Length: 367
Image 1 (tube, one colour):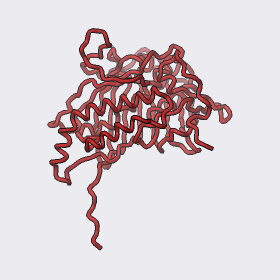
Image 2 (cartoon, one colour):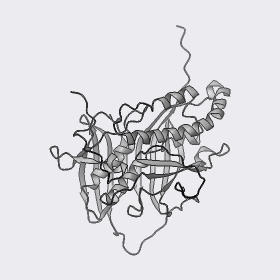
Image 3 (cartoon, helix red, strand yellow):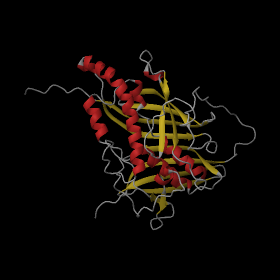
Image 4 (spheres, one colour):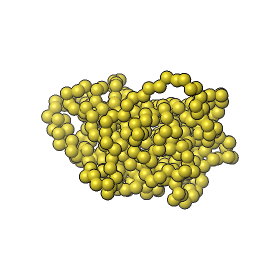
């Protein structure tokens, strides 16, 4: 029997919902269990990636867990591990386990499985609204001083880099301290992001939380190589091959998802074209033993701490700032802070991943 990307035939797209709501829609699988769900629509497999986009597994696991929790509880932390590459041609089953239900906190675990094997696992904690009492300690990191993007037709001449109509849009918010005379651990990058369209009232704050979780995996672990100024593509030919791979994304049925991928890749490509000449010059003129090229970049784990789950809309501009405090032993760590447009700190995220450089070939033995 041929593989199918979904367990059930996907229904028509719901025009009353934002694209990201359609992308992340879940279907209960009552024949398997009361707390088992599956992806309603095919999932995104970026060209060249080992498996599906990790943000989909994160967001759908969160959505599945939220269906088992009372409405007056909201997620405050989520700790995830990527175990195996997800296959976009096979449905995912999300198994929710009700670990604990307390008066102030609820705990859930979710395992995403394909062929009976877990490909992704997460533990989530939910807290009851206003359970901290009237007296409490409060502080939060301040949003960096940036101006939100101007909408087309608002009189601004700022160029907004976006194309197509994918489930979310993202653009640079300037490069911060990304200069050669600073050590990598002191460099920062910033971006704006938001889901496209308007998230429906029916989706409620659950839809906004799932959308945010989906977007947190974008541009994340790649920060490690950016702060080291290591080019993702070591030659114009390699860059061209990556762009050509976008022309026929054979594993994508949803045109909106395909355009979202294209948007992310084209924006990265635009930046790379600008830097490519200088980067290639450095690579070409370095001794072979000093040249650095990316060999592998894969996420291992991903954590999200939701600070103000009711105080933002994922379809309005948010600002994210990323930094990498450490890299070594073939791994790298990235921290991400996300603010709403009014300066509220929404979430703090961490991600560790495999960050390996291409190694020089050892001389072959003459024996």
